[in-house]
Length: 156
Image (cartoon, rainbow, N blue to C red; front, side):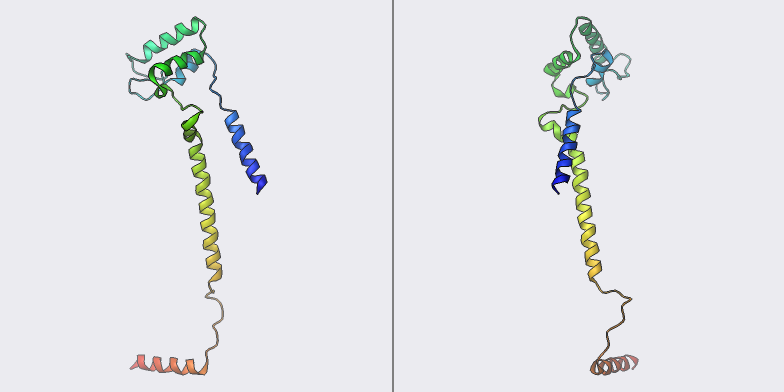
């Protein structure tokens, strides 16, 4: 049991270790980290509105900022300060946002455990019930006479 817990903790630490907020500082990478605010629901990089009032100026600002030597993280943090976390295309790896990252995995794991326990319980209860293929228990003479009387009453 302890080895399973240790393995689960190791897997979680590996997953969380692989998630860093630093990405390459290319224009496309920075644009992918920001959500367009025009209502399309796409990132700034993939917004397909021809005259988008948000994505076009932001793309130009990102290109100018990168040319001035700012990093992608600095640009993203500037937009977070202006628009809040809603500007991000994916939640951060801190605080309550961890629920968005780990919540589905925990829900699937807990559901699987519940299903396994329910199936084991059903299996145990069906094993405890007598089988229909088992030979009948012998009837006493009194039970046989009573059965015969009942059958005769039904025939009448």
